[in-house]
Length: 485
Image (cartoon, rainbow, N blue to C red; front, side):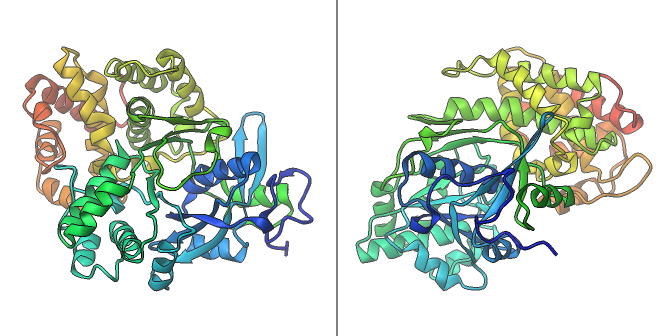
């Protein structure tokens, strides 16, 4: 059996190694949620910053739920391989910026101790949209979210991300320690502002003085992150072993493109991320974020729903269908019409670049993976820009296609009757709404338009647009061959 990746010595020459001395590195960042996207994005950017400018910015990671990734990183002394794939081949980069991994449910006191350590100056997170405990209808705290309920009831023994952040900041305030900077890297619009609102709403219910201290002293910079990262497979692990000469059960794969736009508001320093290709420090991230959410993520969701119900396993396969690829391009241009100018970005060129990235044959990004958590993703990717498009007299037809495709996907069954799991935090509500509804476009669309808090009134009251959704859904229900729109 091949030796496990645990040190940087003796690795195959085909692997690129960290360009700094790991033995001199100290922890300055605690990251919550060490999933594949963090390992393809945040950690490599920090690796590059350490190589370019040094600093005590090593990363400790913590899983708030499952232990597998953290355990694999622990077994490998924090080392793992990033595979960068395109049609020219696959390159391997060993990332060394992670120094330690924690599993919160095993040792919650240990995680809280790291949160109050003065050496930790940034607490970053990629925990997915649903972990924040926010109400999409109000943008504020969801008082029914299990983690929020538990942490409000027992603030000193948190289990959710908001609870941990608040308790960590409370302990630092009590001991006179400068605050850390909470840094959200999840695909939420205005993710820093959303996080700030949730933290402040939480503290307003438990501690007025802490609330005022956080509001006055803690920055919550927003970020826009972009790098397509499929789930790891046996092929990922096999290629990592081939290119490093070591077994690596934490390996991930991704595309060459990477982008990170960060608002430069930090309480106590940061790595020199701006020295790494693809990173941009700005005053306001909103224009870049909206561009990515509406053009990239919106088109990705459109392709994922149409592709999955049409029998395509990967986005690259969907892009082989010329009509669907053309539809994605058309949607990107429709989305671009809802945007203001984005500094330094040519939106036509950006759309063409996105099409090429989606078609990258070396990236196996599953439509089923992208389709998950639709009720969390649709508002910012599709519904908000659809409202704006309609308000400006646009037919918003590609948005109607995308919503109809989501509704067809929400039925949870292929045209042959085979069932699949609807991976969505509101799956039970969706199933209940459509359980006794005739399988027709008008009936299903009417039921799902009534899902509380999802569709804005500007859409549900627009008769021409809702009729368009209904008509397109009827076509998708009746014809599994994905008729052209």
